[in-house]
Image (cartoon, rainbow, N blue to C red; front, side, top):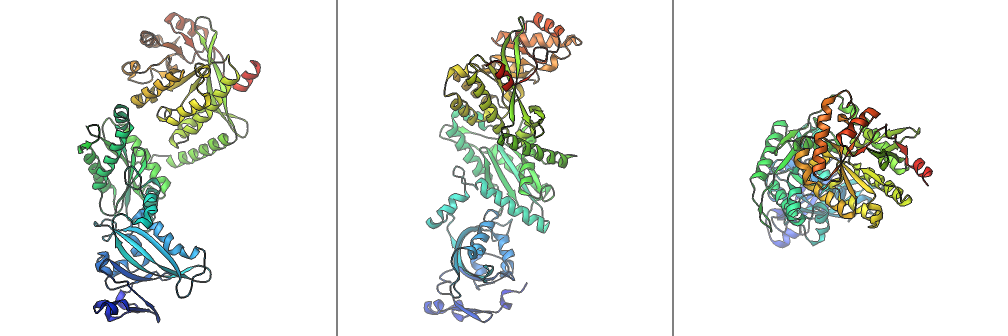
Length: 593
């Protein structure tokens, strides 16, 4: 690369001193073409450039080093080198604003070109440098007849940290309103920019997904307004611990993404520990009281472990899930598993099948009776979801729900299942149904809103609906589950705890939930005749539930011998193939019309 002094750039003496009039009359000639730099060097806070796009060479005014606080013009002598200093979240927007000017309406004049104006953050020291500047870049672009960029001539000016009114829309488009950090769109762009740079240069980078651990408890205790104050305070704490050139954005309600440039495995772990300790030690002043928070962190290496935005985010979320399984705040680095690529392709296939089934109404309900243990009369039916494939075969929910939960599609399935269930209740007033929901539903306020909308508040419908939640999901966030259950009961629904006994904290937490039925995990039932020890657990679970005023349901009942044992043990209800096989809801509806 040639130094600026070697480029065919001629600046008049007025650029190095002289009167204001001399200064305003300065001229620059580039390869025989002259143009005025009227008012360009009005102070130490602005400089000018000419960018020859095909060669990617940039010619700078002599004061560029001082204005931009860079080491030398060699470090910004090409478009690629200058872009290296532009904040990751703004790099794409800057390119589109300047080089995309040729695609706008109107023909460029040979004398004036097409105008552009953009503001962005600039890191003089590069990716790890400090002292970021906010720049305004305005100028004109010339193109060839086909609209291909040829050269851009512009002025770069230092502005305040906050863009001016003319760019307030850009500010709103960049930052999350609550936290003041990058929003999800700009965070994704920052990940894309750093990932592309790391892939090209083979320089390591990292991405951390950070989650506030105790936010649900704070929301439940003090309200969501105080929870928002904690989120904003945590964001500020994390921001203060960034290096120059790194980026932080809000990924979702309680999750932040941190992009770390020039950061390998060891540095990623050190950075994660720095963020964890900073939040843990911070005293958060809220309008209610002083609070504290903790965070869990999952990290992924770029490009060693991920070369696309999708992989970066999904791997970081997977690592975060592992970190959150710990009792206390901590960090987990992503680790590929054998066969993971094959499983990923399988997950993509399942996701496509789920989408198609939802779009073409191929999610169907099967009804299985739940009967009185003494009389074997049907009390209600459980809705079992099946996905119909193109060949007409049915896939049970257990084969696709776990993947749907991982990919964030479970709420779509829950919504469709709810619609089908409420429709059945409306068409058959004599029918009572039990509905399973995924483990994520207790924290999904939209599902409760959908239930209220579909039933229009009619207790004649809700009082014939039992909502089943699994024990493991219920205990994963007990505060959120309590709120979910209480809301369902207020609407008139009954609530059942599924797979009861599969977890380790059932006895401790059962009394906290206003549950109507507990469904004893089928692993205790299926070999009951051959495993007398299972009966000890069944009786203990039954006694516990009964003492709390809850009915018990035994699942996986296979034969009459199991029925006799369960009757003697005092179980209330039975479910299993002995009591009735699942039947398509439409077939059932036709026979009971």
